[in-house]
Image 1: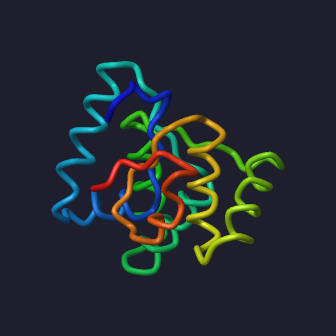
Image 2: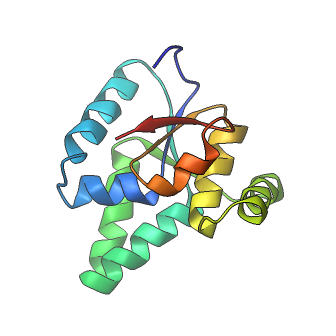
Length: 136
């Protein structure tokens, strides 16, 4: 990554890879440690957090979903509320590209925070040039 990012943005893909112990989980772990050591904020939109919550709740339980979100916050991941500015940015990405609404919120958060989106989701390839992406 050429310049120090203002922040790292996690999408649902990166968090689920981390939680499920997929190959990218080690990279996410290293990123969280490195960001903490360098005081670089790690953010996730509440829309993406909601996606993670329902995926865990559907597969395991509501209680585990609650613990998962709490664990993210304990690891220093800040949940960013979806105000109108963020929602409008997401709507602009969604209207111009074939991406999910959750992905649109992650992209919008990366854009407004001047951060780097951390993902392995190929849906974001179409947004290269509009946002910075750290590919897992």
